[in-house]
Image (cartoon, rainbow, N blue to C red; front, side, top):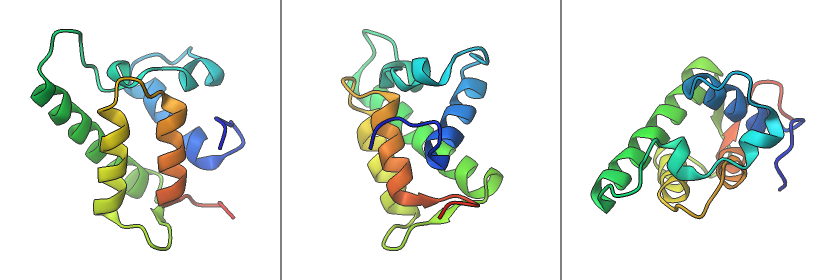
Length: 115
């Protein structure tokens, strides 16, 4: 699915990330192009182990935000473990962007008001 401001999962992810990165003026389309190293705050030269830890940590943070703050539940067939592992895989891949992460979020979480 394309990065879409009318998709509740995408919009919730965007809102959290602009707050988390202190980029509150960043537009929706711009954020959709953010690469995962920026999202997990990983810099060039860091070890693969550090990158994996940062990806896991950010995935766990997102799960907490989605379930506690946004009160999302898991889609049928998804659970906390699956959602975190799938987000972690995207976040650990430096060629992926926010829009790729959003597709995983949309597949694993059902947000309030989502049909």
